[in-house]
Length: 389
Image (cartoon, rainbow, N blue to C red; front, side, top):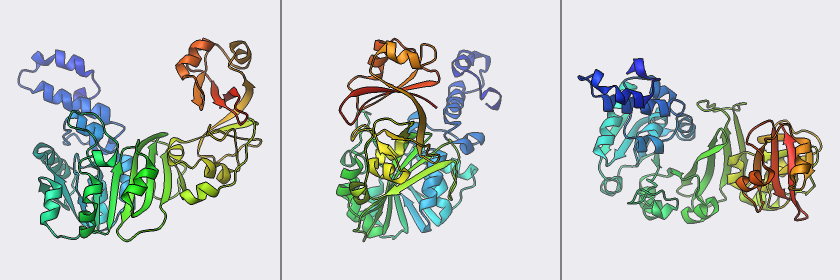
């Protein structure tokens, strides 16, 4: 397998007859999984004794960097993972505990995880086979922490987002969980409505929106049994796949606020000045639209566009920064005066046309060093901001 780790898997399947004594479909599946997970799980893919289960389990699993981030949040005597899966999260979180428990009702997946933990030298795990909710009801053991990442697909295999549509339904078993622990870490879909989830879950101490290379991967809720105050919301963006630091780092951006601060944040509006700013995806998902302007001393271009501007450059902004070259109407003759070649990167913010429609209208190819932001300004005018980085 090591010899063919970087080969084309389709070509390997076609050559199966050359290796009659080998289970080629199995080996090819392992090679394909390693190729797909190379950046997501570097420590696991480097160990050739690690076995990768079906692709769906791999797709749904956490990445190494997000698992390490979770591990930085939880520590104690005992940890129970109610939704074991591939066991990526527990592999890293268990390092902060004397003993951890892995619950999984899929026997095949449980055996795979047992094997992988053994070859990775993870020894403080006890395995629970069967329905975790049933086990929880039958056992009155108390835990320092309980972690769960509910299954987010329905009976037909379609993705679901709402808490009540996931398995297990945290809203139904929360009271039972709080009989067994005071601390719960819940992983949910990056598409979930955060404000609604806080209202539904209650007891939410912290919310973490976790992005990797500007793509929101997951949202975490820290629930405390006796917590009734306002939730702290943290947007974190890891700038490089595979790098995590518990302290301050140039490799990650962290932005923390509360919704009450967002409501009262003082902001101003301005037409585009010299620089344009687009917050990273974690901040945008968090809803810190006013706080980000206040924190970095920026003006908003419009109430609902979520683009920001300034006369002087703000070096430590958490997101993308551009130098503004021109502000135009959606007119090809006007725009091409300010771009190099017949191509540009196009983004829309509060604009009636799609990127595809704008590209067709302007007859511009994708790419290049120029960026077009099609948006609506504070006077409700449709504008295109031409920028470079």
